[in-house]
Image (cartoon, rainbow, N blue to C red; front, top):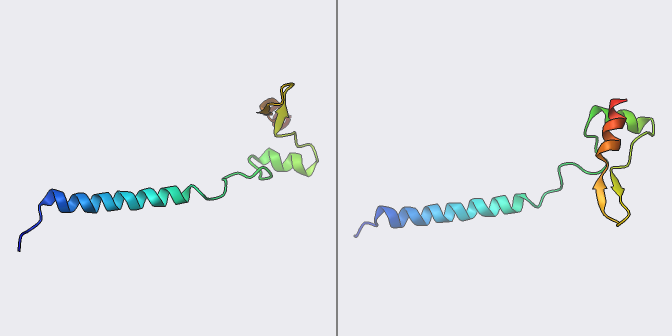
Length: 79
């Protein structure tokens, strides 16, 4: 019986392993997002939400583009 060479046999195993790992990573990316829009991200978010002072997460400019409301959220949390 002829023995397979080291490179041929191991290359197949490594290729199959890499393919399996790639499939697992690709399927893992289909999970839900880490932060939903209504989740608290800082201790101040819960405080502001309980007092109905939570700023809008996004602002829309005159051209209809949505941008994150960083200034409003940071000013609110430091007051």
